[in-house]
Length: 586
Image (cartoon, rainbow, N blue to C red; front, side, top):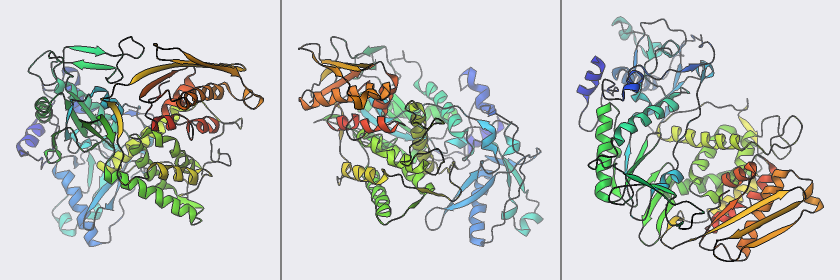
């Protein structure tokens, strides 16, 4: 409790010069008070590491002083403490240039094999798609930010012995004469430690529940009384409204809160309620001991900046739209030109680490523009093309030597990890060590150049284009059902008001020997293409139903680990439909 009081006393109105500590006593829900005090327990899969390799000397005097300043900062904030326990392993640290006269510190919990010893579950993060479900044409937004996100939360004492730091290289003779300690260890969630993102997000969500408060209290800006369902297939379904929404007593959409790692967005039905919700978020977090970065606050508006890689604008003439920022749009185009120039110049070996970083950024940004997602496959294949279990085109093969068309979950996890890693590296300045070839190089997949050209064509705009999500124009919902069984296929399409169109037939010799997953997806894609050719999909929300989970996943993700399935969704499938303003649903 002494530390809680010390951190609180050192804080100013707008900053935390001495850091912060969770005020666990009676402020967190009872179930989480011990966790807020002691930290979330880390799951060890095996014994922790025993590497005690000392830190290498820093020869450059200027660099040594900068490193010393950074290390003293975390000590002065009591995130790192002098070791009075027996250390079992040391974490290496190294500086990375940040601008011309600054550095950021990287703490590598992979080098001492601590990350290899622990297990971390996968976890959910909101995206722009999940956020805009609660929007309508009257919504307002306000942005806040959590300061020092990872460092807000305690590191469980079971991990302390494996997070030692050797301050020897920064200690001068005078420091040694003054008796300054050489050995320290972390007591907060450190950057570079594999469980840090999960634990920080977990504790942030606990705090969110406190922020939301009592939904029945009408003075609470997050107040709501009931839910409204607007479900596809129902007689009164309105494509211009969200499928489910929390409704206030006055009949308007309730205020809500969304957090992507450390970026917070509050939305509300008008400017006043949105401001009150943002104010409640800030003061409740401070009450709990979580830093609110007031300098990054963005005032209430219907046209804010980026959040989770996407920009959401509520425009009077259109409705709810998404786009990316001009800076990210220009960076996306620069990345595409860079790699195309290298391929065209004859480079056969490409930098694997640079590809990983650029792929993370592209995955992060193209979630705003689903039509671009299928053409990231060239990046995915090139990044993995150094592995042995790849065919001549870079596609993964199984032990039987055939393509695997059922690994949609692996695709989704890889893309989510790439997006989160980019977020960590960009905003939280956390560097991740990932599996890579020994020489750091990989070979371009045959389709890499073709996909780069496709992406450049789709991004051939000086400014980022608007993608309409929920327009003021009344859309029509159209429903289709497709199935392929044995040698036959068929589908029906209709809006429940007019005649139903149908198609049916028997596969030719070139198709009937393909997998059932391929035939199912091809039937769905050709059904959609035929409806588009007839002009039936203009200003339409199109739902296409199937009983095949692999086809549904490929359709939804705009991606597949199978060469044949991806060929269906790349140049001709859902990506193309998204460009036509159709929202495909399996």
